[in-house]
Length: 249
Image 1 (spheres, helix red, strand yellow):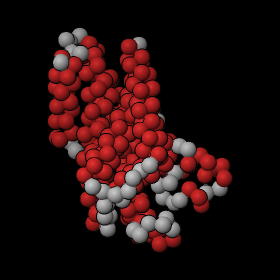
Image 2: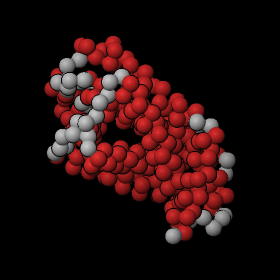
Image 3: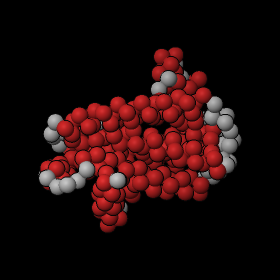
Image 4: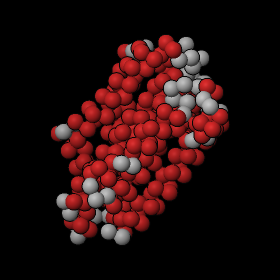
């Protein structure tokens, strides 16, 4: 119970900071919205995905790019907290140790949920029409939240060990690029052999295929199992590594 109370208190502190300075959420939403405009209104006519509406096929990949961009700020916040001596101060206080690391992870979940919701509203204005039922929406939200948790735990590591802000954010560049080598924008069948093999067996494709099926009101099949396995596995490994790094500070 103490861990939950301390985590809630630290999360409240973090969310108050974000509410007073929402520039992070604004920055995270601008690029994905611009990408949606570019792909739908410039490239969309030349891309054949088999979907009646290209934005319906595109949105899941855009959402993952937004989350990958958003978690880079998690690493930045941790870096600055460490530079200010905040972690050392928490250690001298009766604060539950797990709460200190869970706070930035949960902050990433909440802030990225807001960003994804804003991007979803923008997509709706562009013709995005999901047909998911309540169960489909809940599962899709759960997959996105779990993906955010996995990347946020990964962000904790560079946030703790980086020597500069650039070093703290550098880890996110491959994550932002990964959806481009997936089924996010074009069918993997159109890709050359080696690229196609990578695209079809990397985690982002499984997550995107799961979200597409759920939002279209269709059963996701085996894709959801693969997506959940990737997210849980990455979260577990990143959590273990982050805790080890924190203990050595």
